[in-house]
Picture: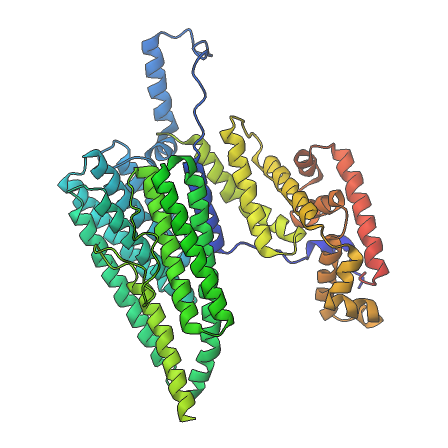
Length: 373
Length: 177
């Protein structure tokens, strides 16, 4: 090997973050920043700055002029935290968000972004409702925007990538929507009917999509050869599910830690109980996987993902909206079908249940096939 | 409400996350740890801002934090020595056992050599390792490395030279080059 050392060094393989890893990391860091805001420096002693000699009125004009000079970029930053009815809200939904949409690649990254947009509309509705500012018009507009984002997310979820990853992302989104529905119900606001209806429609649509997907998977494993291949695939898919469950619990742990001091004592206890339940379910799933109890492991991992996802949403709602969505059901163990949803608002686990049912149906086909052999 | 800190922070993430992850994964054998260390770098940066400090040069700052986290990681895990690494790696057995001349002649061996080189790189002392990764994998200029490591450009040049010679010796001993 005569290549110079420097050349070889330059040719060493470079690991890169996947779009999904990058997106998740960015979201976590944005959350981290939101939970621990940088406090503005004290203005005391700053009155003798560089423009202290300007009369107060002139200072006001100068400030306004600077704001105008900063233009769209500065306005976009300022608009990020705005709500419908605020002066800068049209910039947020008409400039900033479409720009991000345009710059985000199609597929998983775009689906993730559209899901974030859908969740933004819900939290905006919740925030307005809590402040008593959710007018009928505002709610209709939010519901429309929510539906548009949810549909775009659904379209990009089915982008031809890994079907298991897509199914899990879809199921997680459905669980988050149901959790937000629960948050809205707990907000005690009377004017969130429209947005909640939109959420239910989106969940029903997602469940149908998940069921269709499972039917397609089962149909594709109809021949003995394909059935044999599906056995090894199912095992690999189960490991993917386990990884997703562990990631969901880690994410929820981060959220609870970050929310920290912003949670009251009751909420904090509920959050930690729910976290403990989700962690227990992951461990249970790992033990079942080890013991080749694939159905049991599937249920445990799904239930863990659901519990962690709801915990994440509830903790955010508690920290940012001061809505306590935790109740006795929030940290309960899953029911027999693996769905741990117990609220009467809307089913949170249907898409997840569809994934489980799909695995179970494939397993049943395998058993039948084995019996025939 | 304006959020200049958040914006600068996320912009820094968009700009440097990939480079930092690449750097971390070149120095840590575990991809997941490299990802965690990259994320920790950014959370430390935010903590620094929350504490009332200001970050003027994001790249230098982030590389410094990342470097410190990687050093902590080494200390914590007491990264295996070169000998242990070579003993434990199945691939290296073939390398040390054969050391064959054929390796220098076949294209496939280039990939093998690069993998071995990466392994040897991780066995270098931390200052040598970081300077080589910054120079040849991250593609920073000596001036940029000087700013990142807060040493003079001259010191960077000396360190790169010594690190390269050290790595070259290791490679020659194992017939990689």
